[in-house]
Amino acid sequence: MGTGHYSRRKGGRAKIKKYKRKTWLCNRAKDRDQIQDEIEKASEPGSKPADQFEYDDDLPGGGQFYCVETGKHFADAKGLADHKKSRYYKRRCKEIKEEKYTQSEAEWASGMTKEKLPPAHAKK
Image (cartoon, rainbow, N blue to C red):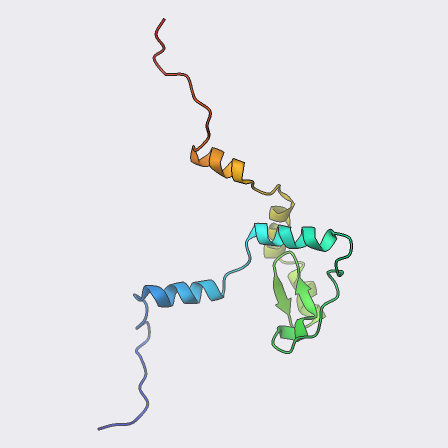
């Protein structure tokens, strides 16, 4: 008969796959390839400089303090400066400096290449 507040017990959604996937994807960082593409587009002539962003109320700090390497927004300049000293930022910069993966490289790694290896027991 109660019309009171209904609450789930703690961890009640732990086994629901859709819920897990949704919560994992919403907090996921950008992939390395996506960030490398953004940096390449920003370096092209005629594109807007990376340090100028339009004001957006929905983003922290109005979207003015953005770290391109990690793809994160910060509330103020001090937060961004502290972030640029962090281990996560330095590791991410190191990853981004590496060469981008290509489709041919992915096929080679998966064993889908067209090259044929000589048979192990060659007949003479």
